[in-house]
Each structure stands twice: as structure tokens, then as C-alpha cells.
Image 1 (tube, rainbow, N blue to C red):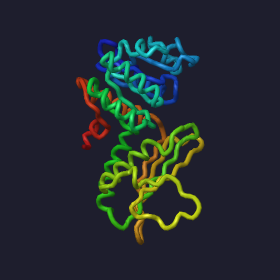
Image 2: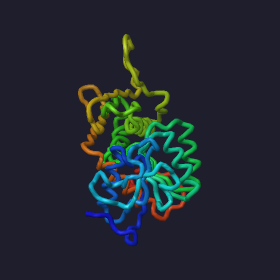
Image 3: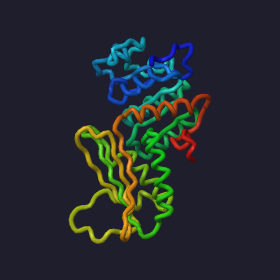
Image 4: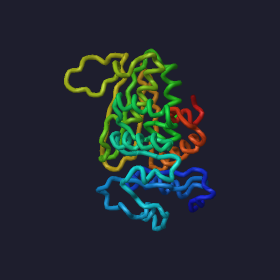
Length: 275
């Protein structure tokens, strides 16, 4: 289904990183939606796609060129979807703040200082920020909260995640979010109880810790398993992504959620009504 006309589309959306794998998936999802229209497409100045039509990879014309200038890319947009790198996202958010454009952020790997800056920016524009936009992942997070509260004693908790060879941060933002949800449910601070590596003689496992294991290889889109290992039984809660389309569809739900909102920092639990 082609995208709606400019007059009919309620949500004018710009995409950052428009020529990347996620950017192209977002553009395809926007064009296939009944209520969103591609209003801007941005990428690095070094991209060979600069100046080309943003939907050329689909064999169609959107009338939206890929541009390097952030403000030009946001000129007709009401909301930006950004799955890039932390430094780029911060630059994009500064322009969004100036232009009054809301944002959906799927970027991961932000520092604590950058997260503080984003919260400050959200005083002026509305932002949905989540390490994973998949509806299924966020339902999984809710299940983990319930499981952690019920299995608070007598169970060791390990988080195992796998992604493609190109992913640059580890553990994944989703794995860290899972750890944060579990730690909060248990009344712990993830910073003080997380274990990210084991090697050599480590001694017995501290039952208050939450362990992380990272796998990188091939074209794995994203697999996450949380293991609650007790005496005589194990409970495993797993989510596996087979396509980035799940992230794109979740992002569009976030775009719709932001309609009419002027400010505030939200997450996918807000979007899905899970809070």
C-alpha cells in the first residue's frame, strides 16, 4: 500500500540514518502505513545517496531527497525517528528542540550525561526513547518485571543476548533495559550488581548479581534470553527478532502516541499502556 497524500497523512515523519538497514526499513514502513508520510530523510554528508530520492531503494519516488543538513531534513516534519549513534542523535535532538519537532529515539549506547541532556530537551519537545521499539520486546519486559518479583529469592539471574557482527555496543541496549527492569523489581541498583565478564578463578556466584553474556556474529537481528536458575528448575523468558520490521512498526506506534503532545519524556510502556 502506498503512503497517503500529504493532505491525508496526519503524521509527517523524518528519518535519520535514512540509507542504513534500519532507516530503509522505517521508510518502507512509513510508505506502507495509512496515516504517515515521509517528510524528510537525513544521512551523513559522506553517504553516496545524498541528493537521491529516499525511496529509490524501493524502486519508487517519494519526492523526498536524502540530505545531510539536519534542519533541511526536519523542515517539513512533525516528528523525527532516529536509530543512529549517540553523538548524531544528540545533534539531531538539538535541531528538533529549536524547530519544535518531536522525536522517537531508538538509538542505544547513550552515556549518563547524554541521558540527562535528553531529559532536559524533553522539557521543550515530546520524546519517546526506548532501547527497543519492538512491541514484543516491551511485553517481554513487563513479563520480566512480574517474574523477578515472584522469583526474588532462590534464583540466579543471567541475561544472554546475541546480535549481528556489525553491532558496536555491548551488552545491547535491550539487554541493559532488561537488567534495569529486573533490578528495579528486586530493589537493587544495576550499576552495583551487574556482572559483565567472567574469566579465570571467579569464585562462587554472588546470588545478588545479575549476569550478562554477549554474542556477536553473522546477521542475527536480535535474540534475548533471561534465565532464572533455581534449585531443580530453570525459567527462561526469550524474545527473538527475525526482522527489523518489528522495530519499525513499534516506532510508528510511538509516532502516533506523540501526536498532540508538546513535551515530556516517554518510553514504550507509555506507548503501549503498560505502565
